[in-house]
Image 1: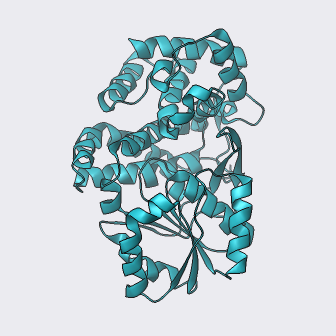
Image 2: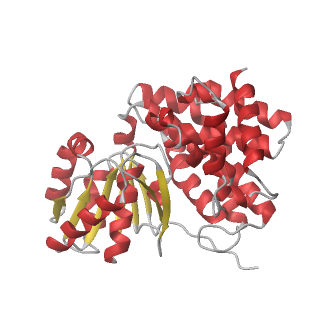
Length: 361
């Protein structure tokens, strides 16, 4: 049995790390394309200016439209070629980082990811989630390697709205349960192998860290300060979740997230918020022990993560809407088929209704 573990080449987490950006760019070249929205760039511009002064290198600011689409990737590819950039730097949330990774892959350049929020595990992964211009899930794009450097400045993340951190907890919450399902099914992971014990251990540690430190991290984030609990949750949301899902695999929770993109009401909610509800559906599908389901529901409610469709803006729940989610979540090649048993559209339809009722109690 072939087992494969993948991870970023280097992961750096520190309060004030962004000011040393040049030290991580220069081993690859002197000119970097920066993929970041004007808002994200503006929030850290003073630090970027300091980084360029501290280590002499050039940043070409490419901007970012806000959605990881094929058209946006093509635009940035052209800009990167025009300026002859030698490395791609993604800064911001998961969508800007996914876009930077796509440009890096297309042009065969190294990439550095710099999350300004801890809302997803995108900084560490070797894939991008591509959407259409309407914000609907379109496809996963898989790459030959993970980012060369993941640079996490915890001081910047501490200043971001706490809702982003909590959304990251929702994304990370699914990691252990999906990894466990994939291990039981001997399902293939992202690089095309099977789970290693280290990957499953990282996924389990991710869940344990969430249960232990989430409320303490929220208190730090609410006050824009860095504590050890916040450091631990940032690591769980970013590194542990990233390693856990890529090297073990995804299953029902993320497929439900993708299915939920069929409902326009959910488009204003973050990835991790939808994955949170997807995790509850996942547990219903596998008929998880009541104690475990109760623990997850209690955790979600304690940190204000969605536990029902109403929490995701779906106030008018109709069979047609639930069917649309179930249909999209079970398309061929969707990750729900990594569950250790056959899952049909009807199974998901039923599980969504059951999870919604359990989550509303």
